[in-house]
Image (cartoon, rainbow, N blue to C red; front, top):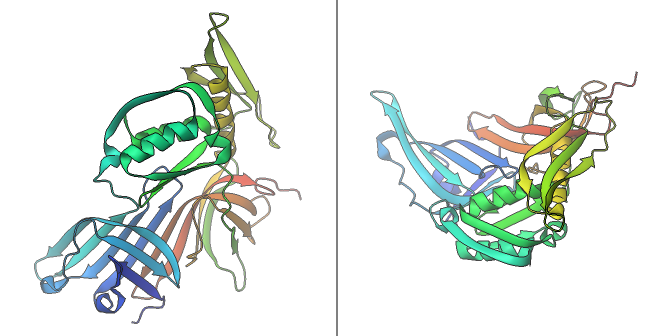
Length: 335
């Protein structure tokens, strides 16, 4: 059966689509919002070892229906097979090169500097350029430090602390404020002509729902511990519950940043779910999903945190989305 999806695979700048067409069985691509690397898996029919192994670290790009859905490098190549059952070659790629300085520990500090100054130095040492959300980049502290952390670990820690999303793609690092993505929204609807195949959604959840955050810090002028408390604005009718941060911040400014980050986290964790759509190459992590046609209280807007594209030569082609942060009418049955 011929492919129902137009696909293109480029390796080290060379279009390999025509050469791969007789052997390519399936394409799986995953785009995550920052907690892990983007991944791509290409499964090929390798009977008799007929497929040439790509070199380790080769640059790979994958496009579906004309839209680029993955950029990265070859990370693993795995051969599987059975006696009398043929063999497969599975080429795995990641969104960044995990073999280099990105995993190398860094020990340095900066005094009276902005977050952009601090992370830019760490990025340069790891061989990366970095783009930082202006609101986050101007955060200033008297002391920033990396104590043996890799650039990857440092970026993830800082992102959690300031309520951002840290992402590595190629040799580019990005730190954006959560909820500020300019990406175009994805529309999903159920019914005649709709692109929604299935859904499994909880438009509100209780365990990680808080109404305020409290962070302890040390006030050097007063020579004593103080607390910074921030209340969360929410349209849900929630009982009072405080997210008490166990670690101690260095000063009031840092405490406020941490509390604000917990506020954005509470908004994101207010609901969860998954949907499966007809192949939608334009979907990206951190974009919004506009859902309709399911039922009152479930229809609404959600933040996409993971995108998985799957297609194979038998004709299947789907996009699965993991969702968080319900907004709008989601969670509200107003009948």
